[in-house]
Length: 302
Image 1 (cartoon, helix red, strand yellow):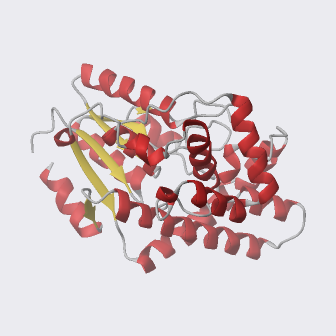
Image 2: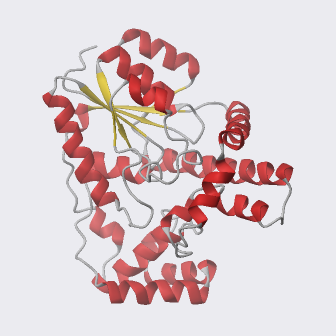
Image 3: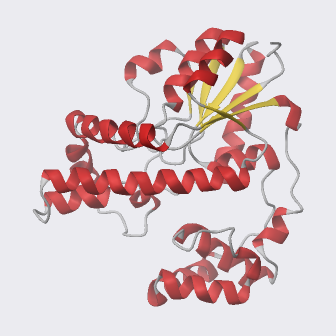
């Protein structure tokens, strides 16, 4: 397989083994790894975001991991700019870029292009955010649907960040965010990508999730959250989307037992994995789906 001009993309639900697969592929093809997970960019959370270990980071050059403080927002636009810069840097060394992560929006920005929406004043954005807090997500989403019918079946009703963004766009530009999407142009040709989507059977993935949660507890996830809480971040900070923070805080406050803590994180992670799979079915239709056996055969052909 001629890979010199290719960019390898690896996606899949949480706990599916994406990082280990990326490492294996990068070692075999003389590649370097670029992070495509919106939470692994933050330096303060390593364990709960399942960032690659120090040992793995030394085996192969990794980019865009743990470089941003949680005190500053990080957008898909910033990620795309840095990802393209690193793709060029890796190619200039005659190596192959391997992008891996679970953030579908990052991959979509890379393969389809980033939406060129006019800058919306921060005062206007804060007004929408206050409205969302006042109404609650359920009523806010219903109000969004009335203003922008294109949102239906495209933005999950529980997705607070994307709901707010869609409301900002329709309110400020008088045009749906999905109409803006249609005007975007990608930075790369589609035939430059090798798109890998890991798809394990449900029971196997559930088992992997349970083992990961146990390992996170052993690795010090509780102390990690204690340290994070000392930063006194705003409650709407993006980092609180990371599964485990709120659950561990309840444990720290003695509201739940260790057994319930683990169970709650497992349940939330399973629900998140389900949403990721739903996203991939709708947004990643041209990606190749691989189970463990198919991945093994694929790697041998590289």
